[in-house]
Length: 408
Image 1 (cartoon, rainbow, N blue to C red):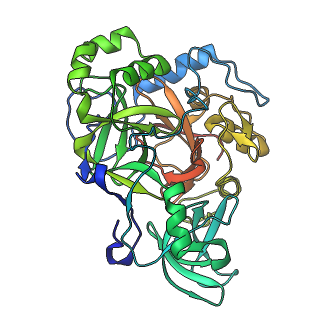
Image 2 (tube, helix red, strand yellow):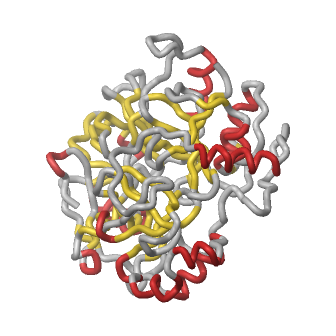
Image 3 (cartoon, helix red, strand yellow):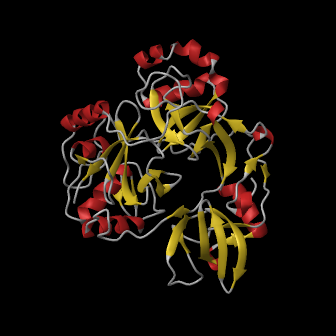
């Protein structure tokens, strides 16, 4: 895509994406009408609290790391290993229309690359680019490149990025077909129809990888089985005939490590690279009264950015899922959490104003299925999915159903 005012680089898919905008009707959690929601505010929903309590009754609190052991309510439904994140709808390749001034990709790093305020290793870190994130390069001088990626502008060591022709070639291999939400708050559905159960509510400008662009009933049936959607939910959605009649208006996306459906009306379809994220330093004290322990665990968590996601795992360096990540972080600080997102929600104290170290819990409409740690400045860090690994996101990229505090 264009470099708009040289603020960031985008890539637009030509041909099949020539139509441009695609939208997704997404419901605010547990609201029956199909309408846009005014903002993704923190709501500790009584319904989801009861879900957390119910799961907690069925799940013992573990003091040692262990894989998910809740057969009826797994942490996530693992995607089949042999399947790519986005299915092939484009005859085996994607044609790109790249229109930018100068492209760079952070490919020569194992996990992430620091973006600094000035061209010096002692300069303040203003953001981080995970492996294969893209940027626009303003200039390269004395081993440093001045770049902008997403909303982050600063300097990176030029030896860690590829540029120009090599970057263009690499972009076709490491880019992803995504949708970007282009309305304030959007409902995501468990099935491709506005009558289906609400999976989650997602925020404007958030980007989600496409799982399947051209839907078929065979694919929908596979998702029903994989996501364990009940017959009652299908009936409430109007039945399979109603789903089939509206199939062309929906896209299947990846939301963390599960799949859900969005209506094409409210999203923009694009081929893009990962972008840098703004990251500051959390310090104890201040007007928010952040404790030294809260500041320490938030800073500790950031060092694992870009590491692997492994379903059922709990290794911060070798691979972990979302609850294994938060469990292992807190274990270092002497706190025992169970290896299950809903169970963690059940043993944490609800708060309305988050502080670094607090846990954000997200629901798929019927149960809490994902957890992330707040690191300040409106951001969370979490083990998201095999494609992104441990990543930093806007805390309200999905509408949280609870914010839980473990330590003061």
